[in-house]
Length: 84
Image 1 (cartoon, rainbow, N blue to C red):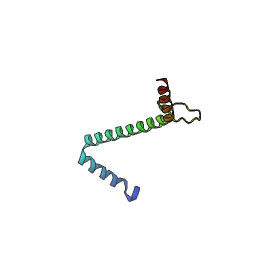
Image 2 (cartoon, rainbow, N blue to C red):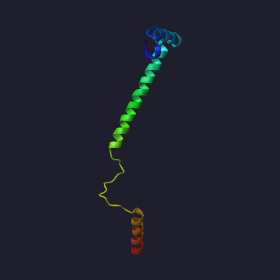
Image 3 (cartoon, one colour):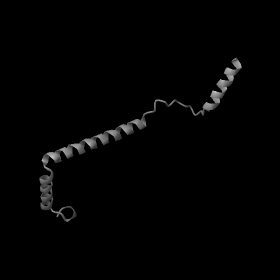
Image 4 (cartoon, rainbow, N blue to C red):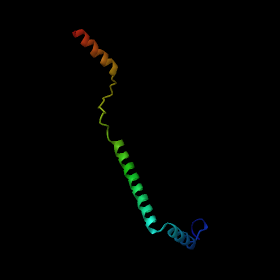
C-alpha cells in the first residue's frame, strides 16, 4: 500500500487518465511554467536576503548622536536673517 491507502497501480491509472485528458505537451508546459515560477521565487527570496544585509544608499554613519533636523533648519534661517 502507498500513501493514504492508494497503491502503485491506482497511482498509475490516475497518471494515465491525467495524461489522456491534458496531453503530454500541455503537462510539459505546465511543468516548465511551474519550474520557472519556483526559480523566480527562489531568486527573489535570495535577493531580498542579500538586500537586508547591505546598508541602504541614504543611510549615513551615526556615531550615537541624535540630530534635530528642524532645529538645524531654523538655525540656518536665523543666520540668514542676521546677515541681511
